[in-house]
Image (cartoon, rainbow, N blue to C red; front, side):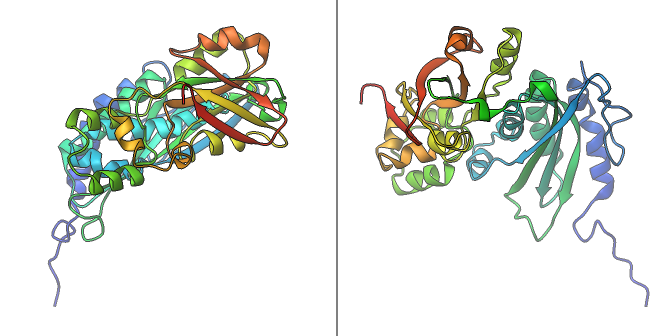
Length: 331
């Protein structure tokens, strides 16, 4: 006996998915004001012409939003989730000295929701437009029975390119080089498993406005790298401060030496309430502690590096002793 079940009855609506792709076209076009794909958006794969580069080296990165996403969904901050998704991958590309060229997203959802998907894409496009990176495509997977109805899965993938001579080489870091830190805009997208536990165990302690400040999107640091290039400075190394904090993200850059850091007090509203419940040393290995990006330069380049992007601080120097030691100014 012939069946008459449809894919839509099984929970997947391919026609609706195709319509949503058309609806997000305005946001896609926002990311192609300067750079353009080689060929049309919406094909099975995206192409980009690298002929303007003399010695092109491809750089890639992928990341997600982590458990911060739970709170972003709970508080209906979908645009912020889109921005976080972009920043986590684009910032990693920027650490290489490369240009972020193409971004692709993966959205897993129980049932297609045009408003939610469009808002996620709008947030992504805001950040991609800001750093001149193309939204080259992506995948929206309708996953009934796999993804819970109140959950959205997010992953992001970025492809960049650098001229081979412009690639950052952390092996050039030497004792005496200077570390410049640039402020974060919030807790960014790391440490949220611990934040969520504190919120559960101490309900009502954190105000709505304080939590809103913690949930602000991850800062894009394209302004820092852009200004460094304009100044003619080639940093010796750059680090995006994510999970592991300052010690672990910096220690991966150098061997046989270390750094002693003194950072400004983190002025994020309500952050002292969070940190009062966190181990005094573990806080440095979990949160960015107010520093979301670090550039390492020679002493002669310090003044220019301090004015690259807003808010640069001299936070330390490279020393012969291995490891990264961090203290907060005034503590």
